[in-house]
Image (cartoon, rainbow, N blue to C red; front, side, top):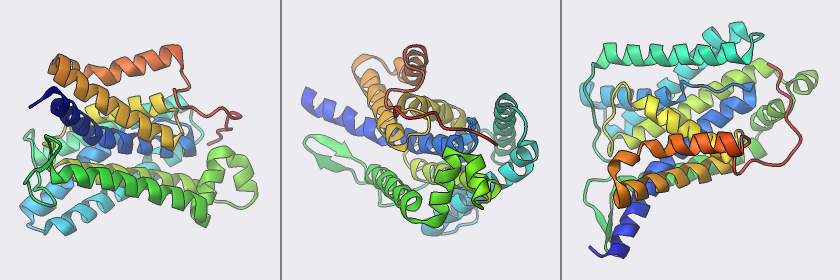
Length: 297
């Protein structure tokens, strides 16, 4: 394989994993816009999506076309219940307290997953088979195309949702000024609950589509959450377009460092980027220059 083909292979691999980081980062941003907090259990929604899909497909023998959507919906329900019973009762607590609650939830989700499924790693069959597609000397797995297409679909769906639907506009209004939204009759509490459900749904979908190419286990969510958070901060918290660009960029840098340097550097890339951004540009590389949003929860 020529160097150009190798570089293309690294690029395709980076875009694939970067798309997952982008989905996790979008989930971080949805909750951040609604509450002003960082949900450090977001990566565990990805893990739960994959684990639950495995349970329905491998244990209950549901068809894959049903197992994935069911798993994503169950994770969305878990996100809603988490907000109702853990976040909502303490809505007047400090941001630090709420973030600590999300850390506790992450530990609970991991512990529950380990109790139910053990420490083994699981997989799902690819959606369209495992026969690789050759492209300019590189190979593309069909599942890679699914991952990229799902990312594009979710981004387009969210843009339409926030721009053209009443509920989406209400959520967007709450992200700018909750007090004003409440005055004009928007139920802010319901919008916050919906944001948790929506972010959990996106995390669950990410877990389903990544499991066929990456084994899923109870601890998988922590690393994905860290890298997704790095992408969210890199892209500017609250900025969906920035999250997508940053997620893919981190995926590319990981792939290049693993292929051209050493695989030992791969997992350190997101952490290094996160530290550099927090040190030199805390608002994120792609942060929008606008008036600071008012956060009242």
